[in-house]
Length: 135
Image (cartoon, rainbow, N blue to C red; front, side, top):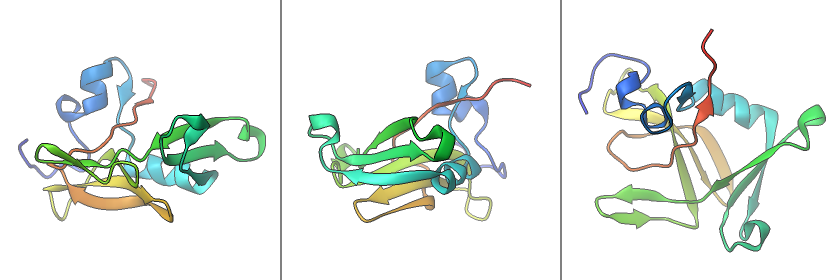
């Protein structure tokens, strides 16, 4: 993947856009931050009796009935998956302008979540597509 001075991934490097097409994209760092600020993150070791650990993310107030689940899928390092079941790394489309080899991600473990983790773009991380309607 060529590094450049962009602040956001080009569409051809956006995994959500390439795999889901249309208006599906990887969320930005600001969108991960907004989700974190406006929802409640609750760790569960056994989501809906599936044996899968991760965070249930629920809306607040009028959106309290809305939720998503973010599995602690770990990350891919070379050919091995590390930290599956204990950590989650969800890539954003926002690049670190001061270090173009890195991009921002939502990172979490059972004790905390950070919507501005900064990781190498070559590490394999989960993607949670969002639908961004064209204006």
